[in-house]
Length: 215
Length: 352
Image (cartoon, chains in turn brown, orange):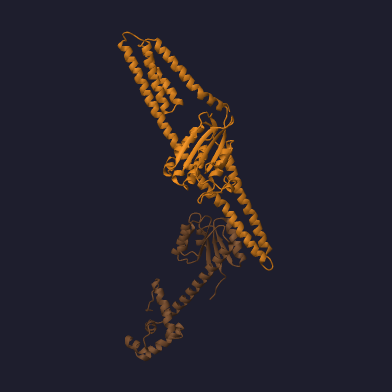
């Protein structure tokens, strides 16, 4: 897996705060990119690396909380750390409920911000890894023939070859051949391993990805 | 200065002119026949009176004019008054009554407008103050936050082996810039405070006290307390900004009401008084029977952002002090002899 150095995105309209955060994050040896507005961030090409956003609540035009919602709609699933000059409880609750890592009131303890950044990067790294594993799995599944897919789902649900052969009106030998091909293509070590893969693929069908058994 | 003197002169000139004129009309009306419709001229008296009297004053002047008309009719006793004479008198009386009615009504509406306007001014002031405080807090907080972040980053750069002096230097430069920015905001606030000289009108202290008490009618009723006013009658006019002085009294009264809410109902007593303490100063004091304040708070009570109230901003007394001082007076607090607190301030009385 090729992974770039983590990047922290800072979105704050105040240049002083922006520069200070830029320096602080670089001083803990992390890459940082700063933006003055939400629009600037959305237009920028983001590097393919684990990242998180340090976001000022009070931004011109699109405020931080609305920006959080917009990112969710755009399926930009980056962890967010809010910073604000005048935070009220309602705002903090809304931000955290929508998945923010932390809600810090300026001036905050710099260690709190650094800790939150680490948590954010770790969370994003884990998400990216899970995503990579899944997309690899899907690629492998895409290489199976329609027959192999049918047999994979049967094997995964724990049915013996004989029964699969009867169900699909095939000879037991043919099922065995298909089965060994598909195990090889899916890089599955055992029937249990295969079942786990099928589970993962099927779980994603709930999230809008259809597990198509046709080619 | 000249225009001020003129206005003061006008304040006593108009009533004198009115009285002289009324006397003139009375004499003329008495020595002439009833046929000559002198009573109609009294309408001018009513109109003049409406320039310097309130609603009730206008009504009294109107009634007085009617009285004078009838009196001169009796003095000009005519055995057989002509029909024209009687008609003239009646028309004159009607004219006076109608003028009085209209002038009094106009005066009442003017007072209502004035009352609403001063309430509105108060509300806007409070709202503006709140907004200004939030905005200022933000403007100072931003550079302050940046300073803190830069300082921490600076420590990190210095901890590197070898220390990254270039980065550290940049942090220091930014800290200097941000501190300058914060002091810039403070300078702006100072200029703002200096930039608007308060209004200087001739004012009756008691009227300001009473109008402020009236603004708090609802609060006084809700907090079930006894409010007494002990106002001295021999106070000369003072010069000042009506709204600002109202603000001071309002702050003191609201503080007192808050303090009284913490003691039992039968103990709640609030006294507002005005007095002339020497030839140069008037004293206004607000005395409550609440919990009072701790002796060690005495020095800090008037400091900005110092509050003994859980939700207090700590601005009320600080603002009050700056208003009183800008009027050339002094404000202080002391314990009430019978428990509670006394807040009082002086205002210079101008012999003007």
